[in-house]
Length: 391
Image (cartoon, rainbow, N blue to C red; front, top):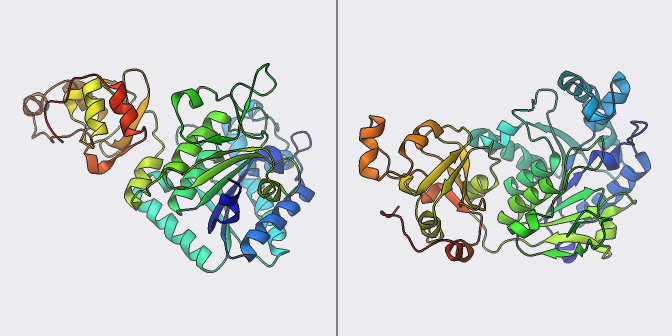
């Protein structure tokens, strides 16, 4: 599938901290960055739009401030201060590396709300489109100076996937410290490399591990979440070992990596946003009848809900899970979680008396929902019961 990168008209490349910054010295890996810029310039010259999602600001700033390089040894405010210092160094490094090839680098700092709130999402997308129109290369990072543990991505894998979805990229490249997905942690006896993933199933998710480097924040689980977002939006994604120089050229040459195939059928823009939404923990668990109804493109009614997980407000993106914990869909809730707990399992005609105001027929309307499991799989796992009303 390396042709997916060769033929892509718009490419997002994510660079991890462990590749860009030496974990012992905290210094920039300049020769490696220059080689990556060579690869990006090759894509750019053939007409592709190129976007970079780059980690490394906190790691670069930590050395300059004298705070611990290991993220586990830093306080939140020290990481935020390190980001403020490191962003300047990181932007300069990218401007120099890309400028050597005649490319203009543009720094774009995003927060979680910039992609999860619809209006801010559209504003960010418009800015990025304008930069690409002028052939600039956006270098994107999370704005760690203001991000907190409660309101942040926490890793750039999912941020890169959200950018790929937002910009309708053809290909997302995650350059990492591993050469792809394995059936078990690499190095364990019997661990096998997986070159191609056609669908992200519960068995695939079970293969995920944790971040292996002290300066990085993304483990395999965040990469699989990124794959779910990107492939649902119609982008192919690849996880590749980026340690060696010219990592993109190595992918093109067929070096070992793991490709995730894009799902067929592009989603409309609004549904791409919903499908890629990063739920902040809110979820509803539904019975088998509701699962079958969702597979038939029907709305989710309160009667089909058996349990509520986490807290959410009306309009928030929530996950829809079956009783085995498998994700079936994502959608925008029409009730707060507190109200859902009161009306779960109840028929529509009962809701007004319970809540004291006129009821909406659906908890999540089908127009505000995207299936994240294959419809036929969801139907097969569901029981024979059906929801009592159509959405």
